Amino acid sequence: MAAGRRKHRDEKRKLLRMDFTTFRHAMMNVPVQILSTGRRIVYRLLAWNPWQHVFFRLLDQLRQPLRC
Image 1 (cartoon, one colour):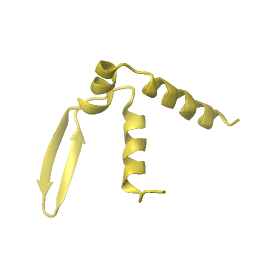
Image 2 (cartoon, rainbow, N blue to C red):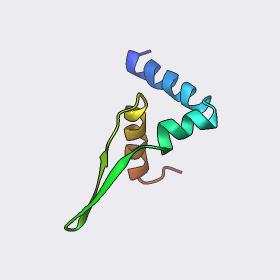
Image 3 (cartoon, one colour):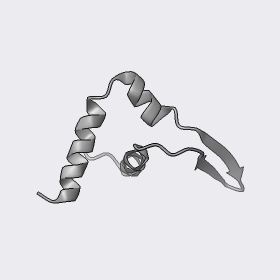
């Protein structure tokens, strides 16, 4: 198994087994500055956390159409 796939699987397992308070701090309570510029809305992350790359991977998946 590739190292990247193993890392992804381990991160998924840790994320799914988190208690809700830890999940909320890692994925929901992200400090963001929201800017409206022209016809776009820009979200600037104001702090770093260790789950940030997983958060961006989630956003990439949510942008794609559903695969049913």
